[in-house]
Each structure stands twice: as structure tokens, then as C-alpha cells.
Length: 424
Image (cartoon, rainbow, N blue to C red; front, side, top):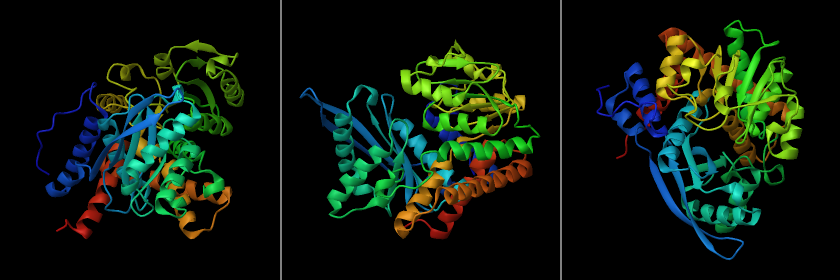
């Protein structure tokens, strides 16, 4: 592949610049043809919409929403929708590209997409969220669908939001279309095991990687940055596996106990007081300190860009598993490589959600639903198989796990492009 004029990403780079750099490096590693590289570095479709919403006080607020479809060469595009004040187009483009690689590395017959609305969902009532969601769904309805683009939950969205999107799309279609979204409530075609899938999938690959690194699980010290749905599941399941979770955080506070936290009790305290700091058997620490705790496994599970060239030299983990999307900047990645700290990249570590979303989509199309045991068993099979493929590429080409995963994913998408060709 010939060189490009794109500037390298830095510690202050946007998520989109980081995603572009990762693609460029993978393309160079596998000798990707220039025309395929050019196609992959541009999203297939970008839609930005106004989302006028009546607020409870009678005023009208206009939010900005996005839906980006990065690629659909392997199948319909797939990706979550997030509600967050910091949502912007660059972030959504990067997340859509990462979804393409995530689907490919796991082996899903999907391309990547992502959506988001710039809003503060914590400051909105349930009715305001419903009105905003339905208007956003209506605005993007022409470009989503079971055979086009299938949304799912992401940051600050949940099964209820997916139900509203499904219902809005169905009203526009004139009949019920449950497979337009995944991550739905069970009552309208959701899948058993979907709510815990992202966290459970991360645990499956983390335990498999620890085995390869000869790291005992029993007593292993784990720090989890975040305590949302995926992060709290990871913490609980790692504790069940025998590890000692010594630190967790939420958007407000971070807590630490060298002897280990009682995760079910932390969950109850968080539910009661809306902060992990309500758990009494721990000391409060700064968010930045949690990332630098001496531990065996660090699991960043909140937002992107938290591991940078500034704090990477002080990270004291032996293994990092990314539940969040893009938590490690390219500069931090290089530092971890130089320090010999393996990083299980987000496109592998947090792919459990899209994997069970695929299961939900298949179940919905078949109208035949699986047990939770079957879902979890198949999830483990997919996740461990993907880790084995990435690990083999990592050893064969002497790459980091991120480079290996991205190279493998790009290779698979590129093959689909070669077979299909470029229209016209």
C-alpha cells in the first residue's frame, strides 16, 4: 500500500484519527491494495439529523443526532446508539469503523455502523427520552432495517430505548418488525443473555488470555474503570471466577480495597445511593488513580481515550482488556507495547454484545428462541475461537494483539470487497 498524507494520531487525537491510524497500520502490515484502503477509510454513509423534542415544561429543544454506516460488504451494518453530551460526528465515525472490525474479527456477517444523539439523558425525564428517541428513530428510519442496518444499545441507552425504536419503525412500516434492532426486552423478541453479553464475552477472552500468559485467575487483582452494565458484569464474573476485584469506579466516584471488593454489595450500594462510594468497605480514590493501581488485569470499561501517553508509563497492570470503545490512544498503545503489557483490544474484548445481538437477530428472523444456557455456550465458543485466531496472528507476525486483531479483521473485509467488486 502506498503511503498517505494523513497526519499520525497523537495523545490529543480524536477517536476518528486514532481509528484511521489503526486502519493505516493494518493496511501496511497486510499489504492491502490502495483502492480497498481508500474504500475502507471512508464511511459508506453519514446521516446527521435534527431531533426536535417537546420537553416536559412545554419548551422545544432541538438535539443533533447521527447515524454512520461505515461498511456493509460482509452484510447489513450493525452498531449501537449512544446518548451522551459529548457525542459528535468524529466519535460516531470512529465507532462505526471499529464496529466493522469487531464484526469481522468475531466472524459476524455484518458491517459496522454507529449512532448517537448529543444530549444529557441524566437530565431528561422518561417521557422526554421517549419523545426524543421516537423522533430520532423516525428521522433515520429510511436507512435502518433488518436487512440494512440494525441498531443496538450503547452508552446510556437500554432495552427500553430499543423497544421505542422498534415500535416507531414498525408504525412507519405498518407491521411489527422486531429484527430492526437488537438488545430489546424479552417481551418483544429480545434474547436471553443479551444484557450481560458484553461483560460476559470480555470475561471469556480475558480468562483465555490469562491462561495463555500463565496468569492464575485465583486471587488475581483486577481493577475495573466503570461500573455500568458491562463493567459491573465483568467485575461480578471475574470475582466469581476467583479473581479479587480491588477497584471500580462510576461517573462520580472511584473506590479501592486491596483485600477485594464485594461486588454484589457494591451493586446494591450503587443502586441505593447512585454511587459506588456508598459501599462502606473501601476507600475513595481519584479516577486517575484507579487506572494506575498495581494489579494483574486492568479493564477500562467507560469512555474512550482514558489511557494516554501521559498516564501509560504509570499503569501497573500485567494485562489490559478493553471493554470501552477506544480507551487507549495510539501513543499509549506504543508505550504498552514497549513495556510488554498486552492489550486485548476493544474490537475483541467487548464483542460479546454484538455476538449475542447476532444471535438475537437470527432468533428473531427464525422466530425460534434459545435458552440462556445455549446463548452463553455459543457466546463462549465464538469469543474463544476469535481470541485463538487473533493470538495465532499475533505470534505469527509478531504483532500486538490490537494490530493482529485489526489486521485479521481488515483482511476479512478486504476479501469480501475483492469478491464483490466495486460497483459499477
